[in-house]
Length: 212
Image (tube, rainbow, N blue to C red; front, side):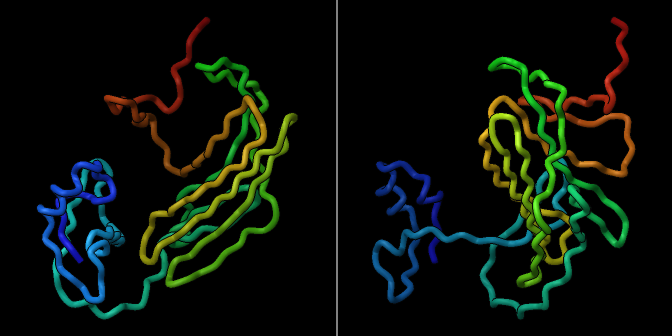
């Protein structure tokens, strides 16, 4: 392994010599000069991260702890018609569906065409478990007038975690439309926070009525 000041893979070409001088190298036989500078990727399950903050983790030397049996995911997911239903201890947390709607706007604006439809699921969900990780895969296909829209959704639940990882692949052959993921929660609230470039504005969930 090695210590380095920055990622070798992201450095500029003329920084190589500087990095070489500034890097403490530890030779691991049999390795070549080139292998000393091969990047190393570390992955771990980061838990208890605050929603609006950060948490610091440290990498320290030591012996590998004995591998413990992976805990079951704290969250469960199942397919229910065109929905993905997420539950915790038998209590509904939220559901996920996918919608498609035509766009009558120009290059800068989205104008709904009024033909919003839920993407229908195609075939059964495929589920599996490996090393404590549970996965559910579902395919959705919607035929528009000028082409088909296909969406493959893969949900992964990590051992002991109540956070789902959702990977989506889209094969789009249609023009002038918008896809959206709809998350329905049993929570009831009057306002929410929206993410913008320089602010987190608080907005009402339902727009205020306006007389025209």
